[in-house]
Length: 237
Image (tube, rainbow, N blue to C red; front, side, top):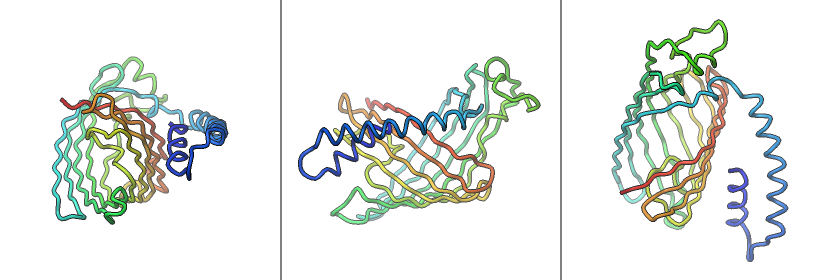
């Protein structure tokens, strides 16, 4: 993912013809640097929260309101049900977000800013965990689903974005780039910053194949720093 993003940035920023030799040197250097960094992060950050891979059932509703030529208001609501890797019920989560998106100019329509308010509430199930899920809980901790459930979120955030949103489910164009940086504040976890980037393309026409990464830096409070990478695919029919 790091190499793909680096190559895309080099291609978009290249003046004149694409220099293959320079691009190869750039990719080799980036691979060596990021490989060591990712290995260190994997060793340092490996914990039960990163190892738990389960399933989420989700129902989501979204409405977009075009206020004027430059501003759009989006409201999103979701209901979630979480299951562990052993298919045990972990609990539920409800989320509501409201966002005001602003386009700065016709000359650069991909450059946008947005203000977002998010409310997320999680409730853990009274499930006594067994199997591989239970083995991820350190000795002395309570052996139930509450150990893995996320913190509640009451967050306000401001973002500056170029390109499409990294969480978009809309069909992609031939090639899309995404980059976003923002500051957020939550009374529970404190203040921090968030960076996102990604690439998206289409395969069959009415679909979206997306590669992305997101980094959260929490300066204080209970939340730990988080680095997430992923691949998503959405097909519209």
